[in-house]
Image (cartoon, rainbow, N blue to C red; front, side, top):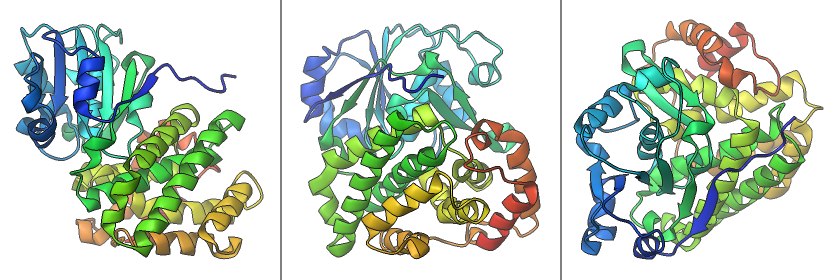
Length: 371
């Protein structure tokens, strides 16, 4: 049984200019990013790279449509290295673009072509949440199927991941909060996965401690306090990515997919909706397994008793962003059963990482309670 794998080299630069020099960016590089990052951090460097601005192709979560439109416009462009500078959307798109003979991304998601890495991949995260810079997973909204799909393969793992604290400076607080809550979920879900082991647990616990500590400091002061801890949060999200890249995440992510796919709720925010409700059910079904030491550690970090650890967690996270009923996103009561059935059929890749199995009735119960 493999315990830990990290194929990506992790670097740190203080500024994008420092990174550009160290990695010798040149005309054979494709840089996928956003204009709001390009203007303040890249434009003045006059780099000879081929730049693609993701938002030109749509907003929100990455989709098959968005990716294929970029692929179409890249026809005839020669590049040896793909450099992703952005959040989850940019990163998930860039991962697919290293594959050989990719003409339609659905061929990759449906495994209709061999997944062969043809280009180098460098990822620079500009949010502190996805951990995607060190995982082999790309997730997209498949518009024709009204769901999300994940592609997990070592062919799309980054060769290099670079932490650049400067790039967090302009991230609005709501996006920062949703992304970093997502990182916390990565750390905590992977801690109770059946694939968790002593090595991944080290990364989970370290990430969890840093994120909760920063959240407490922000809650005690104001949102601007976050800027003091930009590097800490990027590193914590990276460690959470290493943990879940090896141990996996489960029902929290699985249940969020229909909400994101049907109502375009951002990934981190969607996960947040289901986080503590899933863990309360885990505890109810088996309070004495791997969840017990996790709850004990959370109680220590949150300065509360084990009995009210999820209430304390909800209270802390609620000081960053409020959690909304699912109906406020447009979800309908009758969809609770359909979503539950869909999750059970389409998200086995994630559900196999559950702390304990969930039935369709139990999944429906979570949707109903949160409706």
